[in-house]
Length: 486
Image 1 (cartoon, one colour):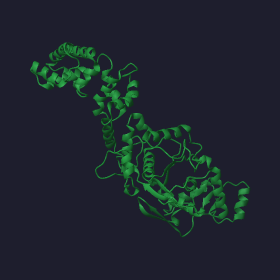
Image 2 (tube, rainbow, N blue to C red; image 1 turned 45 degrees about the vertical axis):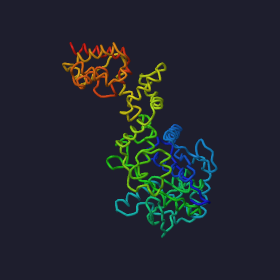
Image 3 (cartoon, helix red, strand yellow; image 1 turned 90 degrees about the vertical axis):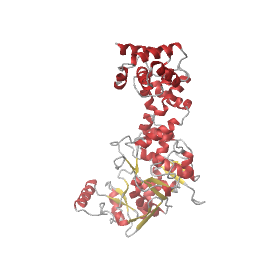
């Protein structure tokens, strides 16, 4: 960073679908770099694919970024000195650049039919040629012939005339020095036949117009870099610095895809992943604060973030690690706040309504949070609390068939019906009941759990009693005792 070129980074999604977790990680790294250096994080919308753009996709992307905790300094819904921030609103500047390219000779019209280009590349592949690409057939056309054919209405595209014998050296902050020989870069299409510019052309123009200092993006874009650098050089524009982050890989070591799991950030939000855990997890994909810190928030990430510490190797999307982080955040959230977050899930499941006391909801959340990974898991785990009766699963049913189960349940119901409910010290109460019956604690606790919740696992039995209340607890104990005795 210099005084005349402050840090400015950008995230540039296309509003053609949901925000991919790879894109979310890229946005997070850009955001962290801008915040680390007191720079600007720009959100630019690359919406030149008119046929696939949708307002719903854009809204989903913006909502996903906000959910993750990322804010932007310039872009949609923000003011800025370098807009507009939608490419569809910058077409005039692209047309001016294309006209300059034709005039100056670094763009030329190509009249070759798409069928010819496809056949050409097919032959190149069949001949196992090292370079697959356009053969520059139209590059030698005179300006007069090019103008004449265009004026006659012949369809053409504009191609970039890649200079011969040059080398583009990219000093990547993550990958070091990467060299591209111009012979390896074909004369690519900069403007389509309908007049719509292509990604590499407008990306370079926008980065320069928005004074982007650093382009931080996925490594799949590394091959685009020499094309964009050459556009900058042709127009005499400043070149940004680059950092290409590693791919996100599935457990199979291949690029993350729907075949191996959810890929859209919105899918994780819909399932109830805590946003703080997702932020933390994405921050670990290719980056580490140090060799021992796994749990961190935005402040810690910003303080430690450095492009040189991003790994070159692909980052494994370890779902088990993500679930561990989710549980860490859930256990660390105060019951009142966690109850607020979980309430929509509980309402949809019919476990709470407007008349449910806040204290009951907080106790419910507190009882289950040690075992939760996602907000969406609680309704299923707590489903046994609904209704008057509960159907025991196989293991619980087996525990209720134990010969001592009926007298345990009858004694428990009698004691709970006569004394303070729930017992203020449940463990001491249960120990006293076991001693009274001359049984071990396992012989007492298993049938109690089975009768009250229909399972042998779950939250503490004392919490289950409190959540069910006296009447339903006693009803379940007595019903199970009767069924066990039959």
